[in-house]
Length: 130
Image (cartoon, rainbow, N blue to C red; front, side, top):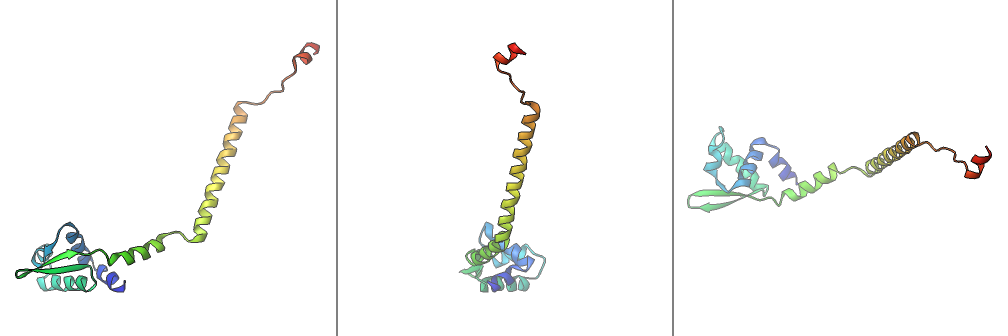
């Protein structure tokens, strides 16, 4: 995972990965999209290849690079665990939800009571004697 993290730490390499997501490209096609030198692009491609993020194949005298996403799976899983709320956070979120639900129910009950106050009803026999 460390090699993958180091490889994606550089903005040029991240941009190369995004370019290769669309289609396989030759080293020259990748280099043409940057203002940096071709040898610098070759070094970036080598880092990506060594991290397993790209695969290169020979096409005559050209090297064609293809994106390989499998090495990102471990990093994605680790980031998911990092982003997931901790056990306590999950419990506190549930408590907060319960508090708001209880307040809403009490507020609704109080509104119903104010708009429809209960009146004491007298039995018809009591009305006649009153």
